[in-house]
Image 1: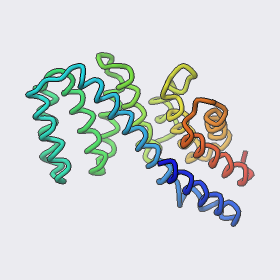
Image 2 (image 1 turned 30 degrees about the vertical axis):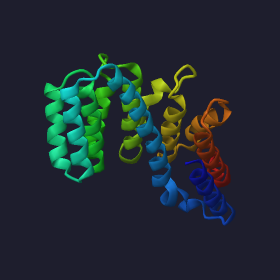
Image 3 (image 1 turned 30 degrees about the horizontal axis):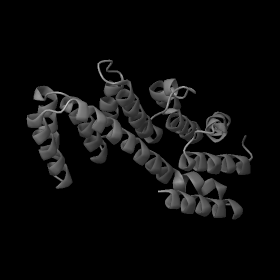
Length: 222
């Protein structure tokens, strides 16, 4: 992933030098969001695994694996049906894992509004571990970067963009991208600068933030 990020940043820097600033978001916006979403999905997977390990139930586990296999076989509708049943009748951690996977499948099918609603509801479910709720909020926020407003993104993740939260880096990135897309370069610059100034920011997130700060500076808009 680090090599891909470095290559991506070099390509964008070449665009900067060739004075094609107005094409940056059109060309690379979806890629930036896609890379960030992969990180969030990885976080969901890690938190989900820990939760599963502590609450395993063999029968529900088998049903969950069957649903995952259906998804891998591109049988999305069948997989969603199995996951929905697991949400109702599953044991231990599996109902919430089914909710997460079902929301991801909806996003992959292009049912973005439904996916956002599902992730947002998970994020508000106080009966779930905080880390799992935070990861769901981030997933909703990244989907909203493309389809919603800055205020909608903020409602999901601004509460995470604080120094004591381990997911602050991704939350700040989602907020910065939403502000940038909305044309509020001053607000975008503020969020990206917080990422760059934070010594604990992951290198790939900090690299993307610095690249977008360069884009903003070269545009002369902030």
